[in-house]
Image (cartoon, rainbow, N blue to C red; front, side):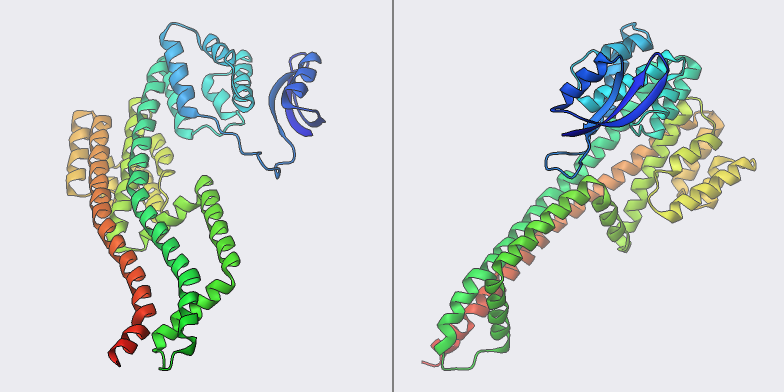
Length: 395
């Protein structure tokens, strides 16, 4: 089996990448360490093999563990060495070793994260930079952990709200597929010698059922392919982006999607301002959280206005980033000098309004979906039995 490895040689200070044959990842690692190399990463070269999957580094867990070790009195290098000494997966171990190497070279933690193969969130890097300026790295990690937990909690609530409607629709479609492909063709045989002319709708149902019965294997393959494609799109984030785009086409949902984006933007700016960033530096980092081009352009224009010397409340209001209440709150924060806390309050208000919309939409969607599935199944049954009703009426 071939493995793609990335190694570091302390003697020369060089990082090398190459492909090596070996029986297992552990065997390859043992050989390379015997040559005096530090293995930064090792992965199966032929990614198309079944079982090979993209490695994931848990950034939130890393921050929590590092925060705990720093709070106990360890130095930064000691904390990273402690994390490296744990029995980690190959990819996680390589990420930690790379961070350790950059620290030993004299680089700050923020630079070590930026240079790392793992794409650490820019917001985390910015928080670390702010913590390094104030020598309060554990506080910076605390802020990011709190921010990440809020985002994860919001995501879990949205996913939980979508599970039941998805199950209802999926189960209903499977029942309809079974009835059309299995039950309807058998009813069609009963009507072969039927003396009376069948209605047009019944004939269409029978034709569809016969087609589904003849190509049942193809249909099941298509359903399986659809499930696999959905899982793959969910993992790479394209499913989420597509659903958000579709929701944005509906007027009633577009407003609340904008609220969701603004909640993330205000929360991010609040965290960055607490870390000592200026508004001009915080806005570019926050604008990356907008997934609508229009909102991102509004953030760019607002930053330009702030750079010209205008107040944040004026710049945001002129670019449609506030409502009347939010504008007044920002003005209060500017007068009191506590803009970060005010932005936190605004973000919390927007989150609560968005979650209220999700809860109401879910409660409304559940009975509507149940009725829709029931109507589909009922329509199929009525169309199948309609000739029998006609026959009984003629007796």
